[in-house]
Amino acid sequence: MPEKRHLPLATEWAHHALAEKIRAGAWVLDATAGNGHDTLFLARQVGSTGHVFSFDVQEEALQETRQRLVDAKIQEDRFTLILKSHAHMKEALPMEVLGRIEAVVFNLGFRPGGDKRMATECSSTVAALTSIPTLLAPGGVLTVVAYPGHASGKEEAEAVSRWMSALAPERFEVQNIRAINRMQPAPELWLALRLGSG
Ligand SMILES: C[S@@+](CC[C@H](N)C(=O)[O-])C[C@H]1O[C@@H](n2cnc3c(N)ncnc32)[C@H](O)[C@@H]1O
Image (tube, rainbow, N blue to C red; front, side):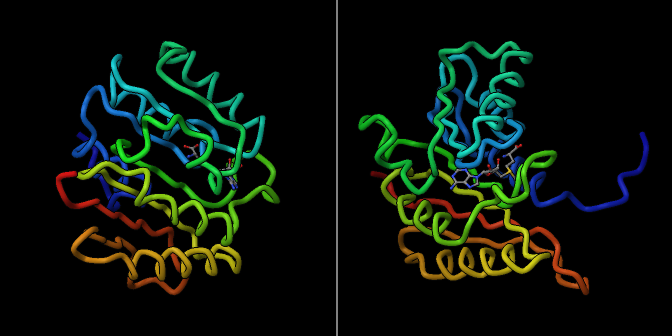
């Protein structure tokens, strides 16, 4: 087997943590559909009895995501693609899923191959994060991959860091995985597990 020369990327760490936590049959949410890689990963994790809700503000992103799911033979009734900002996801979701979502995934920044001007923004990202305690089930996990390597990404990563750091430790367990010996900041992963039994 070829030797793997690097530690996992932030997105790979996120999938690793999510794979451990997501049950077959779960309701899960991708807050930034982009090219659909995370949505497909989530759809595979929850299996034929689960459901993925995916948000994006770009029509092209949702088209790309739909195509990826169709190509992977994911049935149409296993996912819902929503053309709306994640800042409004609480209002856009069916009432019965609130407090029962088992994973929420954010991959911030812009869609690779797409319009860089349509990157996530600090204010809507924080608005979306604010709805997380209402959305996540006890035992549910939130992952956020942030890109502090450029000015707006740095501001956004700092806002994510502030929001995560302020979560009450009796309600959420929080971790941050990042490279610490590089001159240029690398993508980083934030994880929050909702504690409690109901
Ligand atoms: C890095 S990409 C996501 C990658 C994606 N998860 C994947 O697996 O391919 C970030 C996406 O966030 C979307 N986005 C930007 N602002 C948004 C918002 N307010 N609400 C939802 N999506 C947003 C962009 O359109 C872009 O497609």
